Length: 205
Image: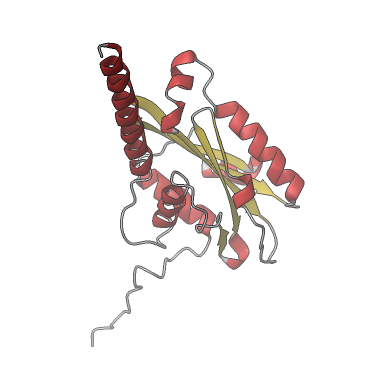
């Protein structure tokens, strides 16, 4: 007699550790890393990268996983400042195109222990020099992921958080996290062109 085996639905991933689940998904999505899973277990940090082309600007999406034992406000503030300073644009061209926010950094703080976290992360979201920094807390032992508040009306941040949720299987539909930024750029460019046209017309009248 044939044995029937129940299949897990898509909403029930086989790996309950959100950190390792996200790393596996990043590899599927074309992100690369110079380190291995053994390096992650040994040193407690691993970085995944993927180059992006946003309109006419080159960009990058980066996921930094850092294992932390005692997560607090000081660590959140220091990591936010140091990571943004490392990735924000420094060249004249990069600063000119910074409106596109073409670099996105997700800092996944992987906390130890089995205590749930309720840290408010929205205040640590930073946009500077073309880089958007988004902190995320992951507690593998209890399968918890803490995101910045999606109710915040920051057009360039919300789709980035939704993209992370898509990678973790919490959203079914694909999310284009750069679309609102590109739309805002074209609207701003149109406004500038209209103003220039009005100035030119006024000079001839």
